[in-house]
Structures are given as structure tokens and as C-alpha cells.
View 1 (cartoon, rainbow, N blue to C red):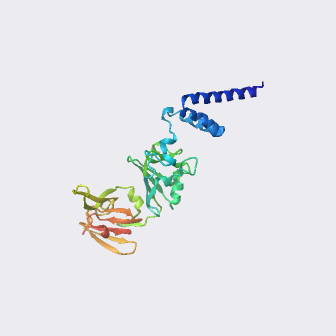
View 2 (cartoon, rainbow, N blue to C red):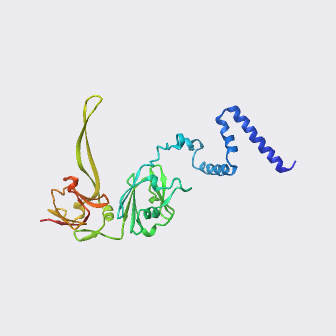
View 3 (cartoon, one colour):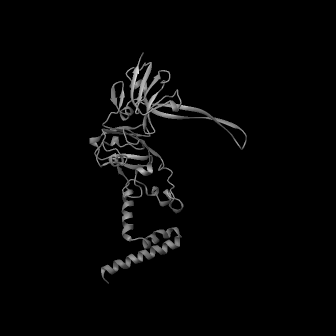
Length: 306
């Protein structure tokens, strides 16, 4: 018998022997044997190489299976990965807003789950900028100038949503759990006491969250008849007015909006005010006033102490 035939006979014997042993042990043990006959051996070999590489860092007992992420008919059951979380795109961008995490990364379309940061920005109309800043869930904050970013600066999936990595940048900048991308553009369309700036630049300075439009609410329970009360409000983050104007002890603010209208705001009404980005515009948020009195589309602020 030739050597080739001998090897073939041995392999067949091993497979048949494995099937016999698996049958004796029960249905679940048959799974490896079924896989050997159901899938191409080349694909199984490739999967085996991947798992062998994983063993270098992970214990085999902690490997994921299909049931780790999926329920009946492939429905998602990966509670630890926030696919429905949001990434905030803000600063000097055409359309500031929120991007769902499951739209940031091409989970289904590509074998390597990542996207270049520059590509993501380009998809949202940001092609010319001076710097980009990433912030994370744990307070991480890292800023890159445009010239240091290339196609190897990547956003990748992570248990906290999205992480950043770039082989050409120091590992301390590889933030995990990114929640916000702040862009600083080349233009300065905002004037504050004669100084040109932009909202992206203001976000890199001191910011503050204010509570606005707090309202008491109540509900009478149809079950026990009890009336239960609570409070609702909005939390808005922006640049504190007293931090950005030339006269922190101002008596009045003169504010001009994009339509050319001028508004006068007293120090009392401007108490706790911040310059924020809402509805795609720069807005002077006045916590002491209701939302209809907030000034939208701000392009210039001048402070006066008398």
C-alpha cells in the first residue's frame, strides 16, 4: 500500500472512530464530527488557526460562542456592547448631532471591523479642519492636529462602544469608550468682544452644564390611586458667558444673531448663561428664562460693564 493511501485510511479511521465515540457520549459531542462533514475543511482549518491565535491571550473556557451574542434566529443578545449608544459630533461641523454607534462601524460589510477617523469625519461633511478632540466615558481627553492623522488612525468596536487606535500615535492617546468628537475648523465665524473664535474652540476651554426648564410633574396611579411627584429638566453644556467675555462683571450683553437682529440681555437674565450648540446652531442658553427666550444663531456678543 502506498504512503498516500495509508494516510487516507488512517484519517478515515480516526474520523469514524471519533464519530463512534461521539455517538456513545451523546448528541452534543457529535457537533465536531458534524462540522467536519458539513463545512469545507479549508474553512475549518482557517477557523482553527484563528482560535489558536486567540489562545495566546484568552483561556479556552472563556471563548465566545454563537449563543454569547445571538438568541433565536440570530437576534442580538450582546448586552455588554452598547450598539444603540450614541456618539456626539460637535464643534465646527456642518451638521452637529448624534451618530448611533452601530452606524459608525461597518459590522456587517467588512471582515475587519474598523473605520478610519478621517473617513468618518468625511462622511459627515468634515474635510477641512485644524484639530479633532476625542473624549471618553471616564473623562479621557485627547487632541490631534490634522497633520498627524492618517488612514491608520482608526475607530474600532469596544465593550464601551468605540475605541481609538493609531500605530503612529502614542498608546496613551488610544482612548476607549469614546463619547464625543469635537472638531475645530479653520474658520472663526463667532465674535466675542472683538475676538474672533468658533464654537469648537470654545468647547476646548472651560465648559459648564446648567439645568434649564425644570418642571414639577405628577401622576395619579390607576392601580392604587396615589399621586406621585417628580421633576424633569434639561441639562445643557456650553461655554460660560462670564469666562469668555472681556467684562465678566458686565451689566448688559449685546447679542447679534445670524439674521442681523440685536438682543439686549441684562446681567440678571444672563445669570448662569452658557453658549451652547443646539439644533445645529450656536445658542445663548439663559437658564433664568424659558426656551423661547434663548437666542439662537448667535454670531456676536459684546459685554458692557455700565
